[in-house]
Structures are given as C-alpha cells and as structure tokens.
Image (cartoon, rainbow, N blue to C red):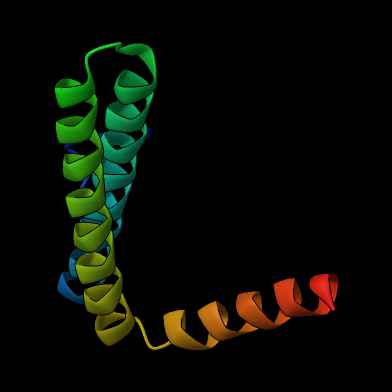
Length: 93
C-alpha cells in the first residue's frame, strides 16, 4: 500500500480526518485494482482470470464511491477534478 495506515491523527481536525480517511480508501482500492489486474495478467487459468478482473471492476466502483465522498467532504476537490479533465482535453485536441 502506498499510504501509511494508521496515520498520525492527533493534529488533524475532524473535518480533515474524514478527508484523509476517504483518500486512504481511494489509495487502498487503487492498490487492490493493480494487484488483481497484475495477477489476472499472470495466470493462465481462464476462470481465475475472469474472477480477478471482475473483482478489479468492483474495486473501481469503490474508488468512485470514495471519490464521491471526497468531493462532498473537500470543496476544492471537484473544481480540481474538472481542471484536470480540461487539461487532458487540451492535450488531446
């Protein structure tokens, strides 16, 4: 995992703590997606591959759930996501 858990919470406000929790959730789900997709690429067993990729897709839904929570908890998040989309669009046009 890319994030340290548990992280130091004593100096974090309740509002910021909830944001950190949502971000750690996103990191954990992204780690799981990477793991399952890497394992699926390694196996020669079609059923195992299918199950691993299905689980990875479920983890992607979890990323979306945490991202929605983060947008609701951190008012800077949504405009930043839109700015990122715009920057990618500019590079691909």
